[in-house]
Amino acid sequence: MDRAAYSFSYIEKLDRAETVEVVGELLSTAGKNFGLEHVIVAGFPATKKQLDPYVLLHSWPKGWYDRYISRNYLQVDPVIRELRSTTMPVAWHEVPYCPKNDKCAHAVMMESREFRLQGGLSVPIYTQSGDQAGVSFGGSRYELGAEDRAALHLIAIYGHARALALKQTKQNASQADGRKAPRLTAREVEVLKWVAAGKTSDVISDILLISSTTVEAHVIHACRKLDVVNRTQAVAEAIRAKLIA
Image (cartoon, rainbow, N blue to C red; front, side):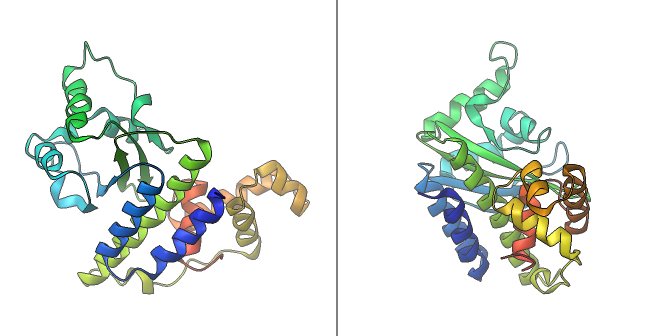
């Protein structure tokens, strides 16, 4: 499977989704195609606040979701702790913690397995304004390669953006999909198109006959205008805003 083509085909499907429920179904299907049967999309509230009001959608096993909320596991979950300190996807089995010294964190990791959540991938999402959220895919097995992780990373970012936009529209809080698209320069758009194609700054600099430093500057400027913090988010938001195809 061409993972890049798969990601973009899924973005097109998400873009056509007209309800948060449909977004959830699409994300669940995407996860299942990678062996991860369950998904949750949620904002990260401030310390000591409950997670439940910030959940946009989920297909977590009911027993686990109820336990996680009632015991406020958000405050001790080592995966959430890791997501708050990185911009890259996190595989659950790679999360650093000491089972002996951090028994609460260990309890979260072990108890999730009772509900066939043996492994998963979680994607942190940030905006320039400081809001934090995450998308987690979980299931009974975890067998993702680097390209699989990259594909789910992009799908997760776009899925979150689409679900949030639909929720805001429904609540009449903001016509998110109808807001004015950010104004990128022609060069910024061109650079993002090559980023979307998987090219590094060095390769893009050779293609466009500019320095890699200039490429990085264009990416940084585009990120600021799009209110995102990394390349993957910039590509997803640019596609959402129909700045690139």
